[in-house]
Structures are given as C-alpha cells and as structure tokens.
Image (cartoon, rainbow over all chains, first blue to last red; front, side, top):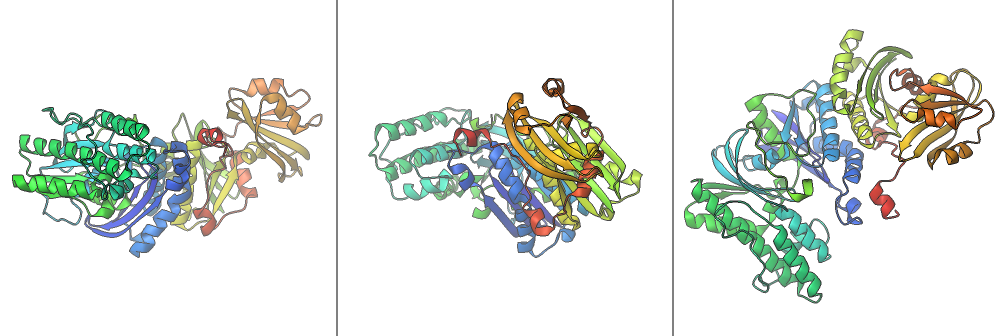
Length: 344
Length: 225
C-alpha cells in the first residue's frame, strides 16, 4: 500500500511516500528558516504563506523522487492535529484535494503520532507494544506509554517550555541561528559540560513532569552576564543539563511502569549525546532503546505516511470534513496534555 | 466547457459549477467553513451530472480577502488542477465583485473592505458588453475620504461595493456615484463571468500560484520590510 504523507505542522513543508508503513521511497522537506530568520522566530502567518507557495513543489518532488504518480497512490495521510493552525490548514487542504481527485482514502493523523510511529517504521515486529516513548521536540516534551495502535497513556509532560524550544532560544541568544538544536550540539562537542552548573529542574521529584523555563532563564542570564563566556562550554553545560533531566525521568518512569523498551522521538532525538546517554542508562538496567533514523526525527512527511498506514489499517479512513486543530487530544481515548508554551 | 469554481476569500465559502458561462449549481456556507469546501465539491457535482474528471477547468478566487481562507482555497484549487491535469483560472476578488455590473459602457469601480479601516479598490473601463479592462488597482488605502479622493470619480460612475457591515458607511461617502451592492458572496454569477475573462494557467504557473495577499503581515510592517 503506497501512501503519500504531508506535514505542514509548523515551519517545514514536508511530503514523503512510504510503502506499507515501512519502506520509505521519498522524504522531501522545504525549510522556511530563511523566511523567519529576520524576525527571530516563527511568524505563523508567514509560515502559512510559505506553505501555500511550496506545497505543490514539495508534493511533486516527493512523488518524483519515489518514481510514482498521483494515480499510483493508495491513500493520502496528513497531520491535521497539533501545531500552528494557519500552517496545518494548508497541508490538510492539499491532502483533501488529492483524496478527492484520486478517489483514495484520506487519513488524518495527530502530528505526535507521526513522531511515535517513526519508531515502528522499518522495524517489523522488533518493537512491540507496550513501549515507552520519550517524544521531545520544539513543540512538545512528553513521556507516553504506547499501549497499542492509537492507544496512548500520558505518563509525563512539560509544565512550560518544550526542550527543543529551549535549544532554539539558547542558540538564538548566542547568535547560532535556527534551528538551535544542531547548532548547540555542534558547539557543545568542543566544550566542557561541567564548566557551568545549570539547574536540572524537577530532577529529584518523584513525578514525571518536566519544566525547562527555569533552566532557559538561567542559561540566558549567564549569557547576558558573561558576554565573554566560552560559548562551547555554555552549550555543553546547557545540553548536559537537559539530557540529565530527560534521561533520569525517562529511566524512572520506565522502572515505575515496568516498560523495558524505550523509544525516542521528535526533533531532539537527533541529538547524539542524548541518544547515547539514554541508551547507556537503559542498557545498565537491561532495557532496550530505539530511535528513528535521523531523517525521520525532524518534522517530515514520511513519518506521517508511516503513521497513516498503521492507523488506516487500524481504524479506516477519515471523511473529507476533518478539520485542522492546533491543540488536539491524542489517540482514541482523547488524551489531553498541556501543550508546550510555544503552542499556547 | 465546464468549470469548477472555488471562493474562500470572504465570510462565505462557495463552490460553483458552470457550463459555457451558465451557472449549473453552487453551494455556500457561512462562517469560517473553508475546511468544508472539498465536501461541498463532492456533494455539488453528482446532482448536476458532472464528475470531477469531466470538469474542463478549475477556477479560484485568488484575493484579496481572508488570509487563511485564501491559503486553503488556492491550495485546494491548485492541487485539484495538478492532480486532474486541468488548467487553473485565477480570479481577482474585485473582478468578480464588479463583473455582474459591467453591462453599461464607461467607467466602473469596485470596493471591498480590507479591515482595520482600509479598503481595496479597482477602477475598470467597461465596453458595455461584459468586457472589463482594469484601469488601476489600489492595493490598500487608509480611510474612506482618502479612498474617494484616489478614485477620482466622475459624476454618475457606478460603484460596486461588497455588501457587508461597512456598506452603509461607504455609500454615505459616495455622493454622486451610483452604488450597487455586490452579492457575489451569495450568488456566484460574478465569479463565473470573471472566470470567462481571465487567462488560464498551466502546470508551471499553477505550481507557483499564491494568493494575492496585498497587505503585508503585521510582523513585516513592524519590521518595515
């Protein structure tokens, strides 16, 4: 089953073609970084305009790269829940037109499901339900128990900023550009993670909630107070604080809920030190870790096509009347979680 | 020649189908229902005996108008045109407003509300047989007085005004002009007429089509870009 997946959740216009939920034939992303750079952050109306400008090119590029045409598609999947509303509606409109014109099923997915399912793609049976998923990106930081297809239980989430967003803010303050994650990671590789002692918010609390705004303030204040500080040391110390919190909380929740398979997802899953330290901590406990291929970590269309495949098998197609929602509950149980600051 | 038309530029979302310039059927939804245009198209076509692949051309209102509505409508129309391999006709909102009032020879102006005390306007010369030539288009003009000054209306110039909350206020400033209410939001004959006068786009131009936003975003205005 050949599925085209479309994602216009935030500031990337993305489309990909995936066969049977596993075999990625193409995954094309148009980044809007240049359009937003001069404003120092994402401007939702401009993101929507850029999506409208790019969407046809990206969809065609995804089909061309996969060597297929619209007529070869068996379904079209789109992220219609979670993100910037003005951006989501563009992808949803394109997906509905394809479904209508090709007379194929439309599958609307929650953007987070794309990230979660990126762990199942290409791993037939290797990662079985239930498993723990730490999904961490610019718009969310969540600990979820993935019970089954479409069935999720919230174990922990951020009370304020998402971890990825804090990477972006720190990078911006240091003049490293956007997106901040890769830039901070590059510089951190040359720095001393013990040079600065930044707070590890809530790390000793028995619950599984996160908070990153205090850490963000501490880092931003240090940057302001010490204009000549070594940027590499700052990045390394900040990155280590985030990783310590994420790894400690994830291991604690895994033990408490007896989940021995831990999956990592979202844009921050690109961070190599996070991947390595989570794996190392899990291995010590006899647990296994999973992380998607790097190309499936950032917002992308292939993960939407992948999730679309599994969810279509599970619950069938959606009507042409589905609507984009900025903060939508997740899964069949209508799981509600607090969106990170960025999406409030 | 059959044409499928989409308008999501205003307070209604409209889909219509016309054959050789005659309106065969249409549907309008009030509110912010641009999300439902695909369902509207699906239900509109069977009763008029046309299937989607039978449609010869797609037409879409490209603006000015609602930012998000236009993004949805233009994306929907260009994707349909590309998948079905049909030409796409871009239609300016003001052209559609004025089209049903073009049967008298001479000048005619169209005005629509742009929000925040601004207006979009365009002046046309009509040949009296439905042919309209754009003389000048004002992107946005602040205030009604400045708008009236910029239009340089001659006595008796027909003025086509989008019917809405500011209609009465506008008309009170239009002494000497003959004001027509444009009902194009409710009755899409103007969209059909304007489509017949517009040039269809083919593949490359369809891919790059974006709405005619006209107004810069607030972020851009603040940054003086």
